[in-house]
Length: 134
Image 1 (cartoon, rainbow, N blue to C red):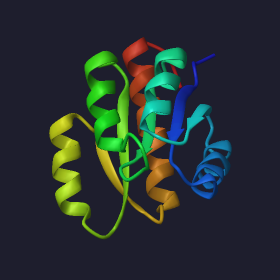
Image 2 (cartoon, helix red, strand yellow):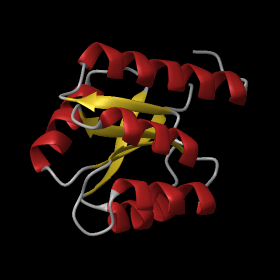
Image 3 (cartoon, rainbow, N blue to C red):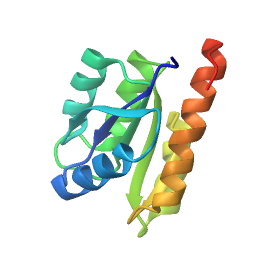
């Protein structure tokens, strides 16, 4: 049986985390294995759980998403990171996020079809890399 795509969700809004957990629960082969409410929590959870993918908000109190992205890319280069931002000011933040190593920048509120497609594509890529069949 193919390994599920493991995902860690990082956002300071419990409502956003709940929405993402609900969305992931409906996507075959994808599993949310942890959550964090800020960048320092993200670094800790990723270090402990080593997920395949992180979906992280850019703007959070304390250590923000960009700072956490720098640390994650430096310490865990194999972990792929998707950054999320509200639409206001997204283009300049997106440029920086891509420069720092994010694989995608998505807007809030979330487009459920886009996120589902992203999760499915990441899962398929992981399976192909591991030589597994879907």
